[in-house]
Amino acid sequence: KNQAQEKVNELREILNKYAHEYYVLDKPSVPDSEYDQKLQELRKLEEAYPELITADSPTQRVGGEPLEGFTKVQHEIPMLSLSNAFNEQDLRDFARRASQGTDKPLAFVCELKIDGLAISLTYENGKFVRGATRGDGTTGEDITSNLRTIRSIPLSIKEQRKIEVRGEAFMPHKSFLALNEQKEKNGEEPFANPRNAAAGSLRQLDPRIAASRNLDVFLYGVGEWEAEEINSHSGRLEYMKEQGFKTNPEWKRCDSIEEVLEYVEYWTTERPNLRYEIDGIVIKVDDLDIQEELGYTAKSPRWAIAYKFPAEEVVTT
Ligand SMILES: Cc1ccc2cc(C(N)=O)cc(O)c2n1
Image (cartoon, rainbow, N blue to C red; front, side, top):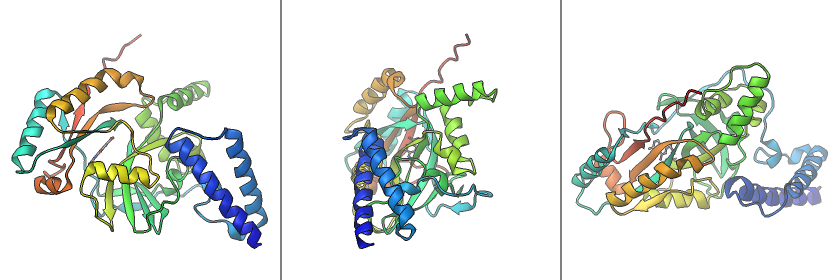
């Protein structure tokens, strides 16, 4: 039996490494067949020794019975929405206001604004214990069983202190087109856009449906966290990546608003080549102490802004 425990631990470690390479880094080091073969081996061992099964085993992604409903979740730290900018002048005004709010030198972080569903993931003792929707910012819904099915969300991390990370769940273009093709074939109403498709998939009570929708995530922030030794947004992005979370690789630290405008310019033309939907660029003051100095308006941070791309003219064929 101890031999089975050792083999199970060894298989889980290898499978978690393969899954991280494939789903998080997009750089598999082995063919799918190798992963499938090891996963089958682990399933057989867990079948023979059910007492060895743990919630964070790679075999436990798609849970049991469908839920009766979703329970409510209170966000200790509100999940705020961002105020919008629509043009260069709005961005220059944002940068000016921010520089007037501090006497420290300002740096920004630019990120692609993923067009999906905002989510919150909580880990305790290194285990994924709860996932929730943003909801109205203070009250969301517990969708843990659906989020467990997203392979790029790790079921365990190294950090043992309680940590809550936040990000966007989304449906890549390819999955969206395939899903709508399937819906049209079944004579069902197709989803209007990938954001609705992701939200609709995560609102399913049966995790097997969410599991079939090929959803993905990019994490971009930290909510509650027992440790607070990092004092920049860019440092947090690097920390999250190191913990095995999927962060969007296109983020960039900018030392001036000119650099921010160049980043916005670049992605305005580059956007159609992305394999997922973005609806803008998020710009944040990088230094957390300056974020603290700048504070919040009634509904959004003064240290962040969302530049929104002009709505694409709908080509009616
Ligand atoms: C504070 C905040 C709120 C919403 C956000 C939304 C996104 C996004 N949709 O990618 C990225 C961020 O860094 C965000 N940051």
